[in-house]
Length: 183
Image 1 (cartoon, helix red, strand yellow):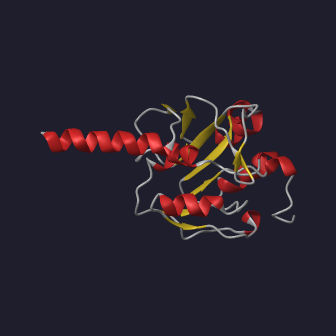
Image 2 (tube, helix red, strand yellow; image 1 turned 90 degrees about the horizontal axis):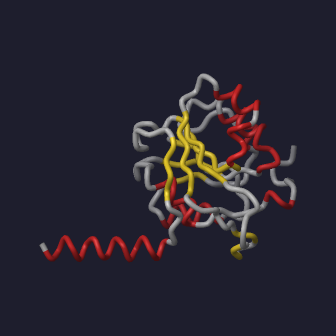
């Protein structure tokens, strides 16, 4: 299978704020493998967030191991079953951004029946990017399905997170620093 010939509907980029939902729980010293290249936007985002990462065009299904600490991706949804079947073979923590309906599919339930996983649920739908432009109103909800991150995520299995713009996070951080400096 040519790894870069997916359905046209599979080429959607993950916006910064969707990455932030997950990366806030990942230690900065972890190296990340993002196996689905897409437009290459993920590399820019992970760099901006201060992570070492590996993100090149190669066939995910032809790789059997990675030196990276964690695998994180928003894979093509048309092959999500195949991606899940492959990713569970790696002895690494992983997180995939997938449609919420994935966790109700029988193949997912069978594949994950003996696996502890956590879910990060955005409190509103993610507006993905297509060729760098935000599209309005994805027709479905997506979640981060996380395996092996129980040391880093809160001790709940399901985590609801507000979907905020990075500018909002920066403003909140500046306000927090101002309060601390006043005391």
